[in-house]
Length: 149
Image (cartoon, rainbow, N blue to C red; front, top):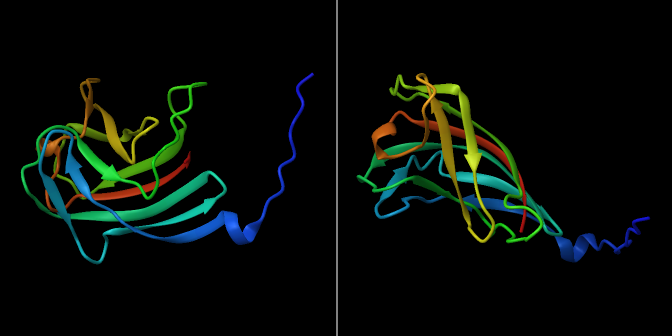
């Protein structure tokens, strides 16, 4: 029989909420500028659990290199029991890339990192990560995710 430990919860020391000014970078180099009206995501942290939600919009693309990475307010826990501790949804809109099926996009994040990437299955069923080639200045990203810090 498994025994659960009951740890006391102190809302005064284990609760935080705020806004995270998101940055968008390339896995190799470069960055993207966000629309200043849509550059923050809301977060709530209770103990080690972090919930993030919001919408960001690309204002200009500075020719990033590699996969597009979106910053998170806290580093994802690097736990050995499983490779990923992120549950989330992403919706892409306003972009002009006809190859991306908006219904086949998902967040990809791994422990030890303070960012997520967006993976997608193209209309031809090819798996890929979002790169500079996919992003234009009309790009809107709406996210909701939960992870352990």
